[in-house]
Length: 270
Image (cartoon, rainbow, N blue to C red; front, side, top):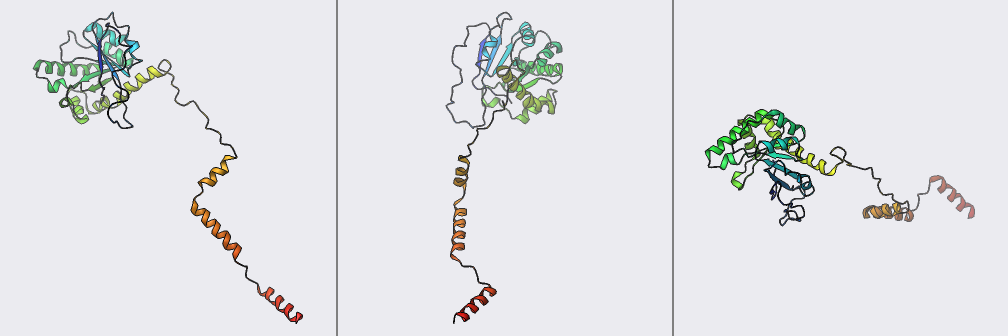
């Protein structure tokens, strides 16, 4: 499931906010686990198809760029030419025309994901908004053939959040199916994050240097025996010292032949 911390929403064509600092403080004012990865997302409301040329500059400041078209023209522009990562639609309103596969298929082939937000279907008091959301969601699932979809809550309070299993059940009710609903929460959500990272860090989104083949540092020969002596445990040193002292203090036993020679020598001397 995708989450965004303090997302910034702006209108396309307004004054640039690129010179300002990021709305997410660094470091965060609360303790976080070491493996937690926090992504910064910017939501753009597309109101005019002619004033969307500043969107590529936002990729330098945010991890994900989400576009919310408000009419048919901006939706077609977002699917065909805009450099965004997510297309998030307000499914609670009624659209003038039905969704078409050639338009959505173009966005999916470019790596853009279609976001479905479910919180309005659970907490909204407007029956018309709920009816529009269910109708638009089922239509999107049918037109897109269950591909390139991700689920998000867009919840304004904790009551609007649901567990992953509940979201999968809701997706199956809308006609997506349990397997594709699970992919929308896991596989598709991860793919849009990695695809946006490749667009920012790699060369034209194709070549990415993961490991450059750096050689390990060379250890000099004079330093190696010192390290071995230092790493030798103390118990082994004591055992070696005791065994050496024992061999020096003890005398070897005399054989019988040597005893006979010593006896003959004593008799001859007497």
